[in-house]
Length: 338
Ligand SMILES: NC(=O)c1ccc[n+]([C@@H]2O[C@H](COP(=O)([O-])OP(=O)(O)OC[C@H]3O[C@@H](n4cnc5c(N)ncnc54)[C@H](O)[C@@H]3O)[C@@H](O)[C@H]2O)c1
Figure (tube, rainbow, N blue to C red):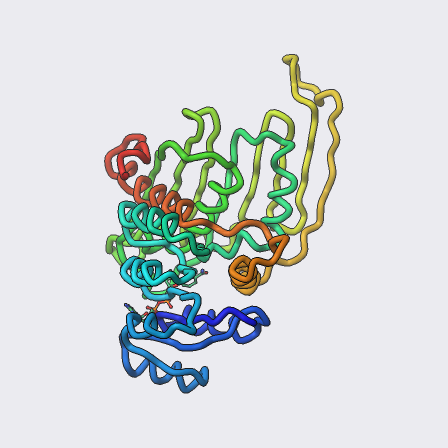
């Protein structure tokens, strides 16, 4: 039997999620909910399911096993707390919440609930993410450099919060950096520039360094919405090898057993290879399939692990710390935000 699921938030993303649910053998869409009655009704008609305008009504329905939360970020928490309290599995769109403190409380509630709860960082389910998960550990990565450059964003993203402007999409890159480097992030240094397009407070440029292990390892992320036609670089350098790519399709990997002597020469035992990665596409479907497979108890899991709420809270803490770090000109330990 497929997992019976309801979508809360019938905006652009909610409707996209509904399409993926419609294609899944593991998921069955049971209802849709939006506080905007006209949106709820339009979505219900389009999707052929009942509509609600209050998510608490949905939770009265005993047949609904899981909730997809696709409201704006500030409403993720109230819907999620109610769904967890009602014993439901929850898939929350990124970012997990609007503040790190609320996100931490959501992570605690999710752990206590014991249901399957994930954050919609679907890029973890691309072929490139799978390649990284397999190729990186032997390199013992010390540094990551990830760029997330793109052209100007649409008007609805011009707002000042850490998850507005470039924060809206760089959260995916932050999650990838944290996931691939592994371990808990310690603190963040950052530089930002706002409002060159409209003279407002929108984040348009950001460069940040996240440290791990007391600064022994780090991930650097460079992003902007004025990176017109710039290739995005992914580069890892470790004590036992390197990996880099400019297109996430052709991936260069060099491995060696370690360098023990000074001198500008190739390390003994150096092996280089070029890997070809299939085109990424939208991995939302794979992310939802993994969520459903975990609820259904399928083994082995169908893809690499999804982002937990604790990991979603870390990504949000990095985004919030980066803004404070830039404004105050200092490294901000993530413990300050707990
Ligand atoms: N994973 C991705 O790649 C991806 C892509 C786009 C958007 N998103 C995320 O999806 C979420 C939604 O984005 P969007 O662009 O669809 O936003 P949107 O503003 O277009 O839609 C949100 C909808 O939620 C409704 N809503 C708000 N509070 C509600 C509540 N308490 N109960 C029910 N409905 C409520 C609103 O009326 C609106 O219709 C955001 O968190 C966004 O960051 C993720």
